[in-house]
Amino acid sequence: MSGLHTHPAPYAGAPVVVMVSGLGGTGGYWLPQLAVLKTRYQVLFWDQRGTGSNPATLADDYSMAMMARELRNALAQAGFGRVAIIGHALGALIGLQMALDFPEAVSGLVLVNGWLSLSPHTRRCFAVRERLLAAGGAEAWVEAQPLFLYPADWMAEQMPRLEAEEALGLSHFQGEHNLRRRLAALKGADFSARAQALACPALVIAARDDLLVPSACSTTLHRALPDSTLAVMASGGHACNVTEPDIFNALLLDGMTAHLFAEKESV
Image 1 (spheres, rainbow, N blue to C red):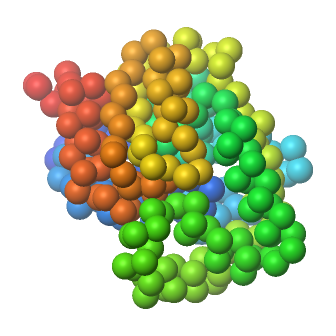
Image 2: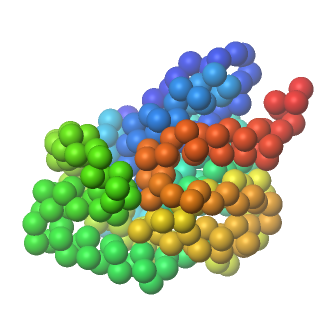
């Protein structure tokens, strides 16, 4: 299975955007953005290989290049050519990799809480999470996940939602093998030597209070890319598109109109 979930185009020839989530891997992460995007763009959600509707056992040498190739193949098989990619964290890295490896296939990028290379802080966070996984299995991993995704005040007000997310996360857990393979690929990714070769425009979005990925990582990424714009949200945490959807969606739409699809939307 390709893992692509296709939403109808609002009009013939509408620009196509592919939404790629982080380590969770499933496209449903982007539901808070669907309503505002689907009136302007043809929206595709992608369940990454080994997650959601795209089951597989990942190879021990699984890499970022493999992830990008899998997305490129899924799009080609579904008949999609040039697309823009909206990626969160790991999804941002997949977008970068695909734009560098297949520049003819990517018209623009939105990179949310991404990075050029993994910061020592983020590496430390993942080391702690991996120890939790080893000691407590899927339950410990899923229970701890909100602490890295959401601001404390937001979590305190959303306990019923968090309990529902936990149950869903456990029932759809991707498996320890796949999770560790994807983590290894993520931790090994470093775009420092290739960033200047990016041929498409990029919108970089960060949240200043992101516990997992310091917002300075997005600043560094923005400075390394030849044609990029940076927007930093005052709050929202790592999953800022979920916790502050109105603010995020406004930044997303404005940035995409101005920088990714300016020529097409002015016609």
